[in-house]
Amino acid sequence: MAVRVGVLGAGAVGGMLAVLLAEAGNEVTVLASERTSTAINVDGLTLRSGRFGERRVRVQAWPYLTAPVDVLFVAVKAPDLLAALGRVPGGLLADAAVAPLLNGTDHVPLLRAALPQAVVVPMTVSVEATRVAPGVVEHVSPFVEYALAAERERARVDPEELLRGAGLDVDTPAPDEPTLLWRKLSFLAPLALLTTHARRPIGPAAEAHPDLLDGLVTETAAAAAAAGVQIDPAAVAKRIAGLPTGMRSSMLKDALAGATLELDAIAGPILRALPDGAAVTRRVVAEIAGRA
Figure 1 (tube, rainbow, N blue to C red):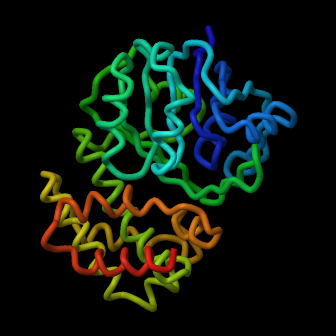
Figure 2: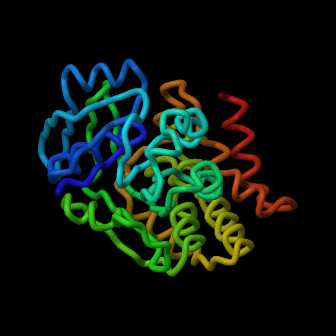
């Protein structure tokens, strides 16, 4: 029996996920703006990927959820979350698993407050992909890695099993939710803030500003420690150094496109955890915000 899956947001992450889940035999409904929904209903969803090849599927797309689902993947950007929740009536999510794929840490308590009848199962994803047109996604990176916490509330339908069934890589290295979210943020925040500040991909940005990168990594680890999560700054720096030199963060792409930036979602948890510190992060964020 096909699992009823909702995907809230048809950007790079949501569009890619919807294609792969639909190809795996699930009953997928995409929830997006009227313009994007119309494009998907007319032309379908297309994924272009070095790993998965070019795939095109037919799925239903709606501006609003109109029937219950077993699992809802939340794949909008953090600044759009409150508005996007208006597309999913809470009564249709009773006992459903809600799997958010947002950046940052603050969206989890918000979702639990907004959708008390659902089971919120926090997840993270590492991927470089771009929505090049409504309903068309290009997967750029050779990887797409999902992660969950080992200790989590279990839902009627496990999102992890859905992802594995679609051929996606899923890891459960984090013992708990705070560790899961801060491990992602400890890598993402320095990457996003440095590349956006420099307006360059990670390779040339790190080469031009090694002091900024070191400060961002150190301060993010300190913020994680204040939240009770231990992060090794040296390991984060090594991981960033191993990235393809031409890799661009999603925040850099948004900045170059003139879109709203996820500054609070990515830098906010650091600044709030270190109200009297994080001098490098504060300076970088102020300069990015000033340009925006």
